[in-house]
Figure 1 (tube, one colour):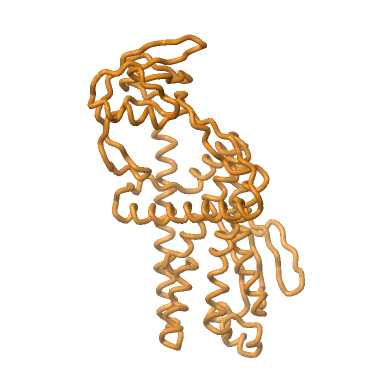
Figure 2 (cartoon, one colour; figure 1 turned 60 degrees about the vertical axis):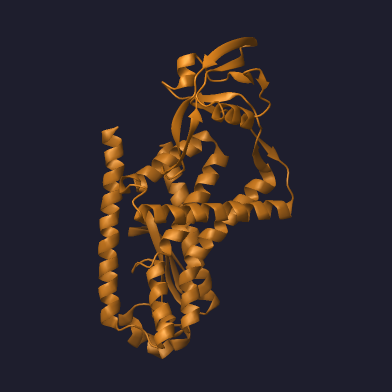
Length: 358
């Protein structure tokens, strides 16, 4: 139940933010909005306010804002009311209306992180030599190291911070090291022989080889108070980091560095959302921020049906000074729908393979 609720909360908020971007700029440019819908499929709740019908639909995997004069078959009807028709707005206005959805997702991420940093403070890892994880069958595990051991010295060299541990192991040349540890208030001496192992980045690429023993530092987070400006700058920095990781992830996927089997769909999102909710609301909000960036960036891909595809056609229209033919646009939409349908089937397959293959 926690997984389902977390999934609905995350997607509901992010879809609302995305569609609100389209809605806000449509209203700003005086385009008549006919429907504002959260979800697809059968309409569960509906209420008409002014000229807009607000709808909550059954399937929470998306949403849409339907504008007057948006579809080609509505062009004739829109001709009598050009001032409220999407099709009769300037190209730059239509561009901004479409771009506003992904933009609002990115701005929402900045706002989310700003609120976290302003009220919680900036997270900072307290430097420690306490061991948080020991890799099975590693030199450290074979020597008898345990989680929560604190490293005091290596070969009689004091280790005041984790970087001291990394450097002394790295520079060992594979020779046996003498570790002095504190375990349950008692000193323990262990002999460990480092092994040369590949170091991988977050995308699984091997970047170098160095001597390691198979331990990870314990996470000891604390939060430093920060003001309005500091929280805003940190929020922008965090959002930019997520944007960079998302773009680089797409590049690595195209380069086949990241296998396609790693892609996940709604089931994986629901599972992660549930776990993050259990870990605490701060973890949950960080996950929501990451997902919001992903939604914004993926919607900017130049694929027909997605916002990026519409932006591509509007850019071509601005260059040609006339829109693409209706036939070309319809064909592109069909290709886009087929591509997205195939992609959805593929990620659902990956999700099910993880469940039943584990």
